[in-house]
Structure formats: structure tokens, C-alpha cells
Image (cartoon, rainbow, N blue to C red):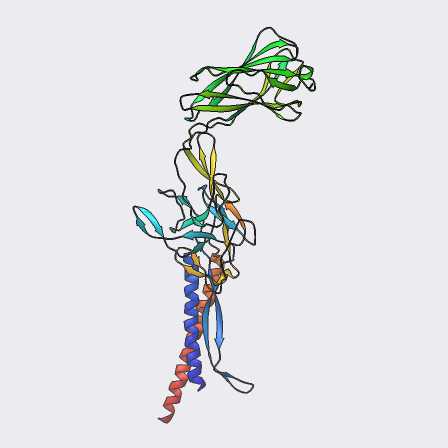
Amino acid sequence: MSLFGSLTAAISGLTAQSRALGHISDNVSNSQTVGFKRVDTNFVSYLTQSTASVHLPGAVIARPAYTNTSQGTIEQSEVPLALAIGGQGFFAVAQARGTVNDQPVFDDRQFFTRAGDFRLDQDGYLVNGSGYYLKGWPSDAAGNPDRTTLEPIRVSQQVFNPVATSRIALAANLPATATAAPISTQMQLYDTLGTLHTVNLTFTANGDNDWTMNIDVPDALTPATGSAQLLFGAAASPAAPDGTIGSIGSATGTVAAPAANATGDPADVSFTVDFGQGPQTVTLSLGSFGLAQGLTQFADTEFAVRNREQDGVPLGAYAGLTIGNNGDISVNYDNGQSRVVARVPLVAFNDPEQLQRLDGQAFMRTPDSGEARVTDAASNGVGKMIVGSIERSNVDIAAEFTKLIVAQRAYTANTKVVTASDEMLQDTINMRR
């Protein structure tokens, strides 16, 4: 009977509008939740019977319509480690399921999120406001990511071990005219403990285009290191272009001269010093043979240094953490050095709307969403990574209030249908009186 059908149809309408109201309420309450994706409502009708001559009332249900791919507003954050995604993609995250020896033990399941309000916790992990741990590719000593491993990123705040100097370089110009007074300059180097030492270089003119370079490290166990003869231009064999180093020889002490002096070969001499931790061999680069670079001899009355360099590094303490736009996480030290420890990838799905929603703005893959494709930011269909920003909820309050009014009116209209159907059924029952 259509009266009963209209009654049940109206009741299903009440249920559907109630669910729609629930979606609206959820959206409004999460309008300020970082990374939240609103839930819209799709109404689907179910028919009892519908032909060319007969149509019976059916029912309606409300299904959630997810907006996982709808971009929220990108907002700058005061937290430098905050991350946002401009475009498609998700962060891979882990969830702690307990602790062992005060360290988190992670759930084996894979989780994903757009909530990038990450901070560094007391254990060195990057954790967002919902308690999910950011995952990434660990990097090797050269900073290259291992794309075969995806694990929670943990930053060590240990010191940066000192690096002993293995190479120093001098770029300077010796006067072309012979001078009676020796010319002195200083270089610096670090030993294996990170202690800074001074290297004295003394250039003594023997004649035109002929110099003796003496190398002395005063605080080494054996201060007198040695010397080498530098021949420029026509004094070299074979002759070199004027003003350039042609050959190095007559090495004494621990100084060693290069074996070859062809044009373009490195004009390097090496010397060995011992600061109490064993012999340390250092290469002194003076440029290249036959080329006007490094140590030269052109017309000038004074010795002029253009550049001094050395590759040693002193002991460094943890100074902070930075994230590059490509996702590289770098630990910075107060000695001016930095080290890439991991890279943050992004994750893409064939159908992100089919992801399973979880607490804390997190998602899990489902058979309908497709496999998780882990890739670098700004590649293979994922968006770019925006450092120092967060993605706000994609809820529009004005739009939700509009939907609220419509749902309220639709709910009221369905109650009128229920009331009318009830009165008509009552009239039908009263017909026998």
C-alpha cells in the first residue's frame, strides 16, 4: 500500500538527513583541524517497483563522499619542521603501539596522513600533533637515500666527529723579481682530534724563476718538516708558460714532490706530520703545472694571497635541523657542517578517495584505493613539499552552514510526510466506525 510505502520512505529520508547532519557536524567541529578532509553526502535512492504504469515508494540512504584529494589552505607555520603538500600525495607515517626500554615500538601496518604539523620529540623522532611518526628513506654517509627502506625518522643529536685535514690549497702570487728577504705565510690544519695547528710556509728566492719552499709545523712532534724547490716558466724542464709552475723537485725531510709535471697535472706536494696520534699525511695543492692557477709568479712587488683552503673539520655539536624542498633532512652542527640523515618521500594512490579513514587524520590503504606508490616529492604524480607550512582543513564553514539549512529543511519536510501518512492511515482505520 502506498500509504505504508510513503511512511517508510519518509522515515528513510529522516535517517538519511540525520546522517547528512552528522557529516556536517563532523566537518564543522574539525574546521580548524590540521590536515582534516571534509565528508560530503551522497543521497542514493532505492526503488521498490517502478514501471511505465506503476511506481511504488522506495527509500533513500546517505553515503559519505570523501574529499581526500581536495586541497586545504596552505598556511605558514612558526615551526620550521612543519610540512605541507601542495597537490596530491600523503606522508607515510607510523603509529606506536607501546614502548620497550622507554623507546617506541611501531605498528607493522602502514599509515598515511596529510597532517604535517611535525615536531621533534624527546627521543629525536618527528611526530605530528596526532602522535604519528614521520617515515622516510635513511641516507648513507654521502647523503644518498636508500629507497628500499622506509622507516620512522630519528635524528641523533650526537657530536660531529672531527675530520683530520688531508688537503690544503694555496692560491697566491710570488713577485717576479728576485727578493733577498724570504716571504712567509701561514696555513692551518686539523689533526684527528680536531685540534687546529699552524703550518708555516716560507718562500726563498734562489734566482729568477727559482724558489725554495720550506714547510714547518711548529707544534708537531718533529717541527722541521722539509722543503721543495719550485721552478717557474723557463727555469723548469720542460719550460712552462711564464709565471706558472713548471716543476717541483729537490724535496727534503718528509716533503714529497709529484712524480709528473705535464701541463695540467696537479702541482701538489705532500708532507707528513705527527701530533701524537700517529703520522698524518697532508697534500699541499699549489695549482696545476703550466696553468695560471694556484701559486703563480707574475710582475708584482709584494706577495699577494688570493685564497687559502683546507678540508679538515673540528669537533661539532648539534645546532639544529632543517628540511629541504626535496625532503632531505639535514642535521646542522656548530662547526658549520651539516649531514643529510634521511629523505621524506610522498605516497600516491590510484584512488585516494577509497582510503580507510582513521583517528588523527590518518588513512590506511584498501583494495579499492590501490597500492601505495612511494616516490620523491614533485614527481610521479605527487605534489611538491612546502617546508615550514601546514595544510589546514578543507572545510568551508559557509558551505557547511548552507548544507545545514538544507538538511534541516529536508528533515522537517520528511516529518510532515510522516505526519500526513499517519493521519491518512488513521482516517482509513476510522472508516469502519
